[in-house]
Amino acid sequence: MTKPPSDYRSMSAAEMLDNLARQIYKPHLLKPREDLRSIPEVLRIPILIIDFDIEVHINGITRISGELYRPGKNNAANSTD
Image (cartoon, rainbow, N blue to C red; front, side, top):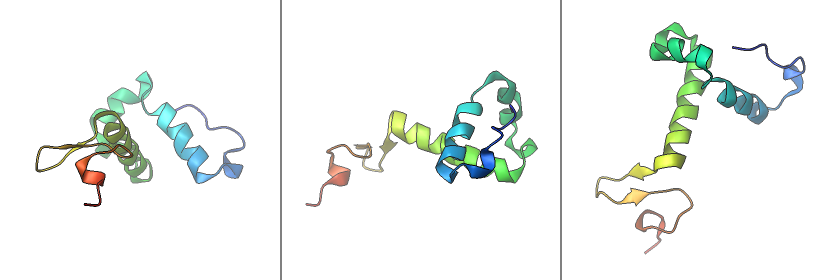
């Protein structure tokens, strides 16, 4: 990973996650991500959460009924009926 900004201690958690989200898809991290056990747990968990969040935002979640759920969209999964 590239060296974190010198002011990382003053960054909010959201800013740190945003910075991490930009770094984890760079070429130098692709090989270590093939075996997530090689990455320290303190980074592995946020990486998995970022991956999940991106997947949900790009593809949605398919429900058991087969309907596509997309957060924030008008769909049966979000209806209150």
